[in-house]
Length: 184
Image (tube, rainbow, N blue to C red):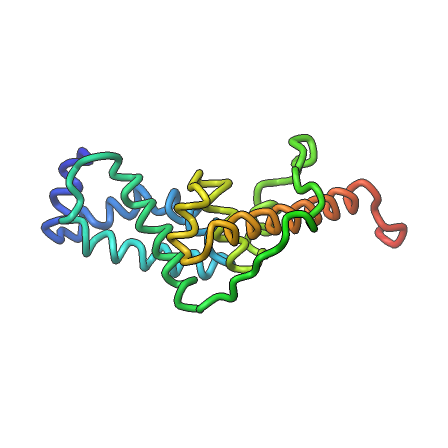
């Protein structure tokens, strides 16, 4: 079935087509959800909510632009909506107080799942800003609008997220290079 046929049948609430659409995109959208959610369970919930919205609003898709991109935006905004409902605390950090947060390319030789866990452990606002900016290429202005924060908050949250990630990566790397004398 072509993508156009799949979309057409999903608009008609055809369960078989909806299942096929889910099977085709569940992995991609789940990995996207993992970037914005605290853990795998939250990511699964977000994926579920995103597909409900996709099926409910597929009639609004105008066949312009990338269909996958349209679904990715829905998935990201579902995670952001849940975050916004928690009424986060805006945290601004003076950038002058932060040391260099550049993570050197050679530093990141850890498995992807370890790095993803580090990202998921970030405080909500840091994780969202980091993922939106670093992983999905949104601007600070766009992020500020999405999260209802100032651009300077977005920038400082990004720097703080990078700082925390750099510490975690450095600590993880040093434990691998210097195993404890108590390890067997």
